[in-house]
Structure formats: structure tokens, C-alpha cells
Image (cartoon, rainbow, N blue to C red; front, side, top):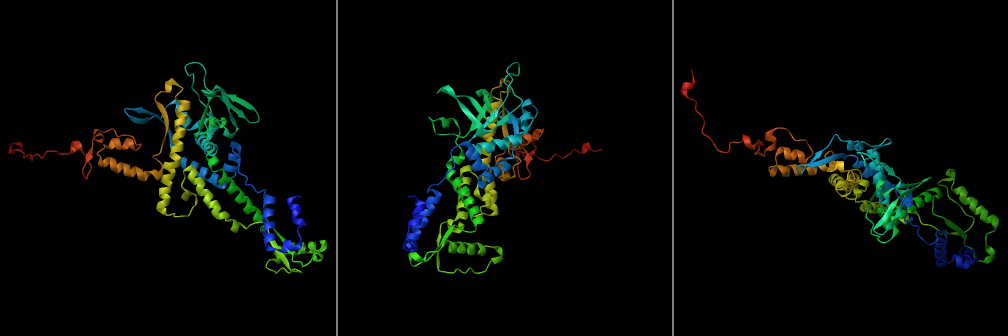
Length: 435
């Protein structure tokens, strides 16, 4: 006998018993919801559809990271005399503004962070010159759709990757040297999935699924105005059951009571009825608090302060400024530094002519980091750094003046060469000097 059919076999005495009513409610919930939680599957497409594209908090956090990261400036450098020197005019600097004819570098970085922070993986493709003096160089960089890229197995365990395959409406195979795989570390050694990076959302799969279901539950409650319920007549005998016509009449009364024109009017039933609730209200489910806690968990996973995501707990102006600095130091700068390192590995290291060059981000225009810079400058002055050393350390160009290469001392900041270290007697002119 089916579980739902069991409801129809109960006698009126059992239905009217409070204990049995609670049992019926529990059995109904189990039957209608299968008694199991549905957690999003561990695959790239699910992480995109149910995570980044399907969860408001995941989207908001990654989008906020991208917006803040756009303040940093990508640049090409080399090291001379132990110091970073920016190279403003080089064939590689074209990648600072545009990676290919259809995509700006800023869009490339944004897409890279979306894929990596959602899936744990980002794949780049570069077509390279195969012959001549420019062998190994490229003038284009393309971002592959990470959820459609499959890693092809290599010949041996020492060479586990044999190439990459893009599966969309067509299948394209790439040589291993033409694709760069940027990923988060995956500790699952010995499995096929260890070749792929671990998605941050893998650790938050239950949280994301719970938030998505909470939103869906709340939406259904808005549509239906209340949790599902059943009315039953408190009958005293088997012969006192409602007829089909009477049941329809009660149903019509309930429908009529929900009309806007009858709002606030009392509902009068022709008999004594009981009610069994088959669901729980959003207030009883504590959906709002659960969603807030889920957002905090996601912020922790990304290393992003929850205070910046409209979390009002313990929020003050000072806390917000400190949170913005923490967002940079704990989340944004590490992700951008990884990107610059990956770009250097992919575009520069394979080409001998590029030896000594590297990409890095300039954070001197980031307002949230300037307080720390002011503290640093104060310390450098107290340590008697030269003005030009301070300028170079803070990203400014040195001034071509010998005094700027000397330590400055005193309240008036006087250069060393202009200070009288040994007091000299005043020079009194000879009378013969006057005519």
C-alpha cells in the first residue's frame, strides 16, 4: 500500500487525534520531499549555474572582488640594480590594454576571476609562431570557457596531461604548450579530478544549495500566501462525513475568502473544522537568518570581509575602512598577484628574448592602501632614507638632483651636504676691501 494511500485508510477517530495529526504531518512532509536534501553536484556547470549564476551572494561577492580589483594597474617590469623598473614601451605592453582584437585586458581579468573563483580553474589559449626569430611569441591571448574544457590524459603518470579539449557545439583539441591552466590546489591525489583545481564552492556546496532552496521556498510562499494545509471536519461518527458537494462548498468558501475584495472579512464555516499544516512559514523556517549566516560562510571561504556585503553586525566607519584594507590584503592582492605570475609564466618564460621581464600590478592608486603607505613613508624617513629611495619605494619616479640622493635631517628637512657639521667663526671683512 502506498504511503499517500495510507492517509485515506485512517478512521475519523485517528484523524482527530492530535498525536496522529502530527504523525500525518511528518509522513506527508517525508512523502512530498522524499526525506532527502538536494545538494548541487560536484561539476563545473553546476558551480556556474547554481553558484555564480544562480546564487545572489556568490555572484555579489565575486562581482565585488572584480570591481575593487579594477583599481589596480597591470604593468611590465624588469629589475635593475635590485630595483623594479617599469618598462612602458615594449611589444609585451600591448597585453596591458588588450589581449585580442575582441577583448580588453580588464575583461579578460574579470572573466578569469569569475571562472577561477567559481570553478577553481581558468584556461588560457595562445596561438604561437612556430618558426623564425619570433618563434614561441604570440600576439593574442584567449580565455576558454572553463566549464567546457576537459583535460586529456597523458601517456605516463609522470606526464599526466596530454593536452586539452574544448567541448561545445564542436570539439577542439589543443596542444599542452598552447594552453595555460590556472587553478587552485587540489589535494585529491590519485584520482582523475586531481588534475583539476578544487572549486571554493565545493566546500560550500551545502551552504549554496541551502540558500538557493531557501530563496525558492520563500518565493513559493509568496505565490501561495501560506504553507500548504488541509481542513478536516471534526465528525463524531463514520456516517457524519462530508459529501462531495459539501467538500466543494468548503473549497469555494476558502477560494472566495482569498479574493482581494474580501480582505479583512471573516470566514464563516457551516460546521466545526480542524486544520493540519503541511509546511512551515518563512518566519518559522528562519530563512532570513539562515541566508545571512550563509553569506558569512561564503565570505569566509573567499577571504572577503562580510561587513562589505551589507552585514550590519558590528559595522562602523572605522571597521568598514579596515574591512576594505583586509579585502585587498587577504583576497584581492593574492588573486591578482597569482594572475600576474601566471601571465609571466605563460607569455614571458618560454621566450628567451623576454628573459628578465615580468608582469606585476601597481597598487599605488588604491585608496584603501594609502594609509599603510603613509605609515611606511614615516618609517622610511625615521630610518633616514633618501627622498629618491622613498619615491621609488612608493612607485614615484626619482628626481634628477644630487641632493635627492642624500639623507635629509632635522625638522626643516635639510639635505646632509647643506648642513654645517662643524661650527665655523664668522668671516670679518678687511677694511682694505672697501674703497
